[in-house]
Length: 166
Image 1 (tube, rainbow, N blue to C red):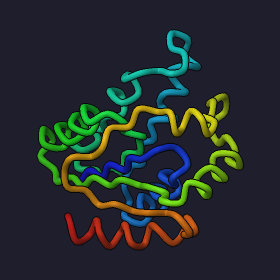
Image 2: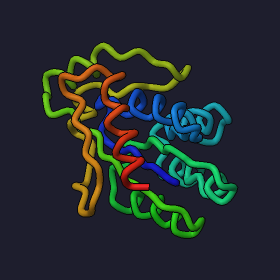
Image 3: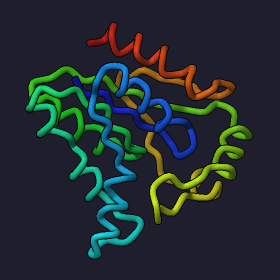
Image 4: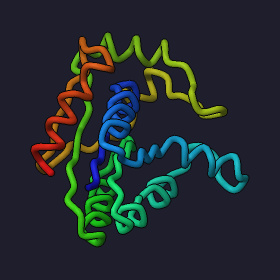
């Protein structure tokens, strides 16, 4: 199964992806990690562009029978379609999850207080987050609002939703 967790920075995607991945034994594919590896290798600079999304499609892992929780921002609809297409080619079901924080003040606090857990990765400031082009989702998905919720509380609801949809 492929679970794609998308949403703007500081909505809680990473926290939401890590716990269910461990619980169901899925591979956690984090595009930030891939993009920073591309930058460290020399030819790329931030913003990396579509390369991280292409490398992180996880199609090979899906073909091997592994479940994957992919965690990109997924701002344009075309990247969402590419991940869905990888699941279709691998012959596995997929679920899309959009993570939002409906409280802008809370999300802004998160942006300001985040620490880098990937060495060298530049984190966006609030102006970059709100100024980012983020196309609306136009198809069925699970929406998880992390406003007012501790990160460890949201994954339980997501695991239930994944189980129902798989």
